[in-house]
Image (cartoon, rainbow, N blue to C red; front, top):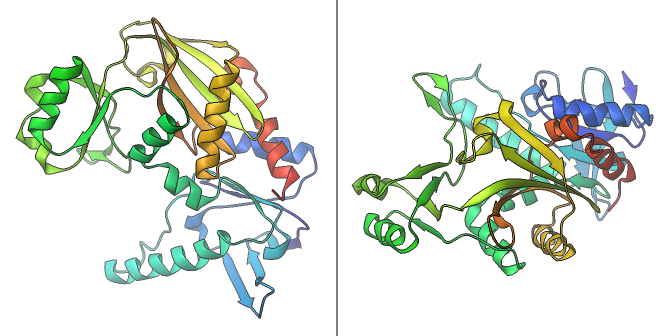
Length: 321
């Protein structure tokens, strides 16, 4: 087992090609890396830390091949770790063990002295709430589509009458199975006949459908901004993620005012990384749809050659904020 000086931690699942791109870039720079996943704990991941007076937490994190001093960690790339896995325990014990791991290991990793987080897990959690995303975007000066969040069918129907064509968008996408198979809940257009009493069962987000001709995916990494225009083959396609095989990509420059507004948005959440999605209307400025604080970007580097992995490696290598 080796002990790494000033390592970068990469916290993600085993099969993560996007993280692999950043790790390869860091390896080329001879930056020490320790990669692990939440599901490694406690089988192959160990931690010990103590606190004494004002010095903060001292201790180590240990994988099968690396041992890291907590105070020496340069940065943490919090990508897409799995949940803790205590499936070998009976359900009540598993819930207890998961909570202890989350607040124990998770709490230590959220309080690393002098560490650069990309992004801090608490900031990611705050920024995933779509109501706060939309109000923050509007306050930053971004154009936001008319939106209602409700469980009242009458309010949803009145909203539809007022704005015309509307879409439904899930407020959060977690694990979802259909006939015991993993499934996704997509953005979809909804008709007036679908706005029935079933809406009362939980919260729903409805928005005016944008009359768009393209989409923008803008990836902000530290002081770098990478903007890609995405045009589907089918002009009526509501969400370009439906049909990756028939998309065209082009790199474009954004107006400085839009960039400033995105930086203001990220500052509100204390984020150094974010993937913004905009609809490009037939007329007027791009319309903010959402910002994913832990979004995908790897395929865009493959399609365009934009140096996104290098920009992330710059942040992680630099370390201390």
